[in-house]
Image 1: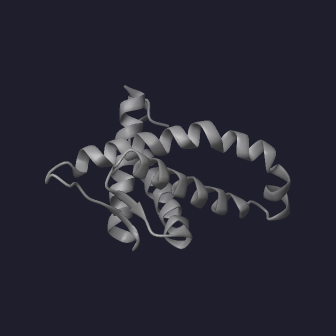
Image 2: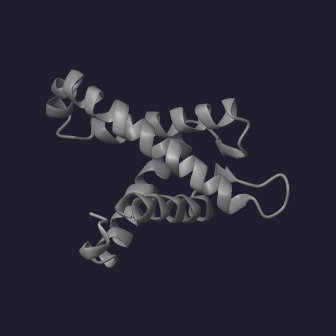
Length: 127
């Protein structure tokens, strides 16, 4: 149940990101498939973050220390761009227009996900 709640939180954060950040777009080709697209892209984003982010943190720990953690913003933007690339390979209607859209999109995603996670009770397994 916790995985589904986390997936829903990420999908909602992604939707809000598409509304707030110019250059981050999602659209269903066949009408009402936007919600399904958001869920699939949220799943891709979650897998990309779960698999690559820990590896990047370990390998790039010097950059994290030298930049006082600001390097994490660049890493998050690049992971957001990787999510865009994977979505394009799967022919999903999700687009991120360049590094700066990914940079701001990743920041908005993180903040909105955190805010929603704070509002969701811990008994549902979302932390």
